[in-house]
Length: 230
Image (tube, rainbow, N blue to C red; front, side, top):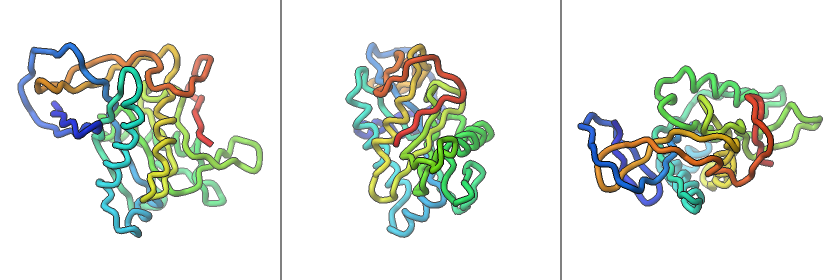
């Protein structure tokens, strides 16, 4: 099971075997388990600035958690995994002919990647950070540039993902990340893990409908609906 250490508002996990604890506290903070990937452009950007990738992402997600902590009930972010890549054409990336990142195509490939990766499957949400220009090729020409994209079913869906543009070193994608994490349908409830501050253990708790949703979308979502930050 997972031991949770609450470093401010960002929960860090340490996986280990332990004995279950029966006592359950009355008030347990909600938590969303996030796996972050830096694509080639983002990884290279961090390297050029001589930044420690994991330290940067920990700070990045801490900034995200500051916004989510203001919600009622407050939501904490648990960074359960992080990965960089030296492959420009990674299997979870889709490029346009012009060399830009294809928003919809990348979401599709990223979901397929999440479904085939055991480590990624342990998370509620996979976030891909990129420095590349993200464009919506399904829109009218010229394709508009985007700051981020995520399916509207958000963290409630199977293999849920988000793609966000972040200029390495500047934390420019923080607000877009919060926005994309907010795409929950009105009827959705999710089973999430929550950490006890008074006892060792991890207990399930449901996130109320649209807890994270700051930009509510009316209507029933479909598998093809996506939220886009411009």
